[in-house]
Length: 346
Image (tube, helix red, strand yellow):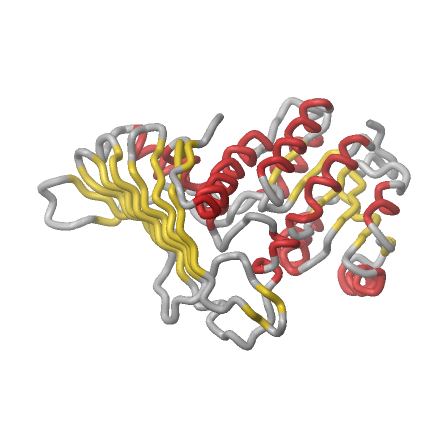
């Protein structure tokens, strides 16, 4: 693919909401070899406003199909809710563009698998999903402790992710509560499944229960649960209890507890503090995070470096990893629908 305009990478943004504006855009602007040339948001007016306030040299577009026709684009940066991810991704790949896609990957497993299949048809193009921000700082430390068998073979996993964001029954439905926009994605389920599978391997089966406490929001009928409990079995033999809620007042920080044959490990996602201990210790202790193991948010840098490498670098999370967590999201939805244990086929 040729790069015009002094070899700059030309980016078209589809979906220019808060995450793109506050998280992705500042990092992209730090790259002198990157140029944002076109923006398509939910309306032309919002596209124009985004350009005026953030990238005045970019062209606002009426819709994403029009944006894909802009000559010499190298990258499509997708920041929409999940309902557009599959269509825009596949169309962009077919148009010869590299694709960065906001999480969650897709509305359901079928769409995710279509995206993966399209990426395999165009292996010369770079594809990447946005990772969850949770757990990045001490990711390598957790992997090291588990690889060194510090707590022994894991057998019990507990995760809690509670907020009070949806407590007000009079508030309008958030886009994450609207199934036509978010699909089968529920609360932070997909986010933490991605994190857990990164550390503990694949989940092989689930039984899920959900409850909709406030089903009507300003005339809109919500069918995505306000709270969700998932019993799960990992392929490594561990059993898990994963709890999610958007209606828990005064909730504490998101946290993970892993219990093994020799000890335990806790992760506080609000502070990235890891605590661990072995049987016989008086209590858990804070595990120091060495500078060489400290991670962070460098998502945009990773993607741009991969595009510039012309295939030598493949950024993560990739579409295969996205399909892995979408299998669990789909299984949770199927389990809730049929009130039964669902084994996850690979």
